[in-house]
Length: 103
Image (cartoon, rainbow, N blue to C red; front, side, top):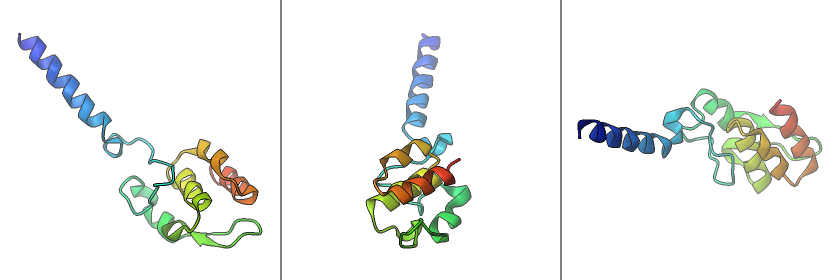
């Protein structure tokens, strides 16, 4: 009975930790809800919020104030550590910059 209770508590603890990826050190969500002000990017949060990005032939922007869906996805890919999200960017110049910045 004691082993069963220990096993149940262990599974419960793992389920709680798996539900909170920021605590596990996993990548930030790199989707349209990405927010570089959140705790998911603590090591590069200041750069994420303030660095001005200059896409080729495009209008400069900062991830702390992204204005388009493509810009948010770019920020999620670069600062959320999800390189595969670059493929979701429709703007070809921003997509190329995304691939360069996540290499």
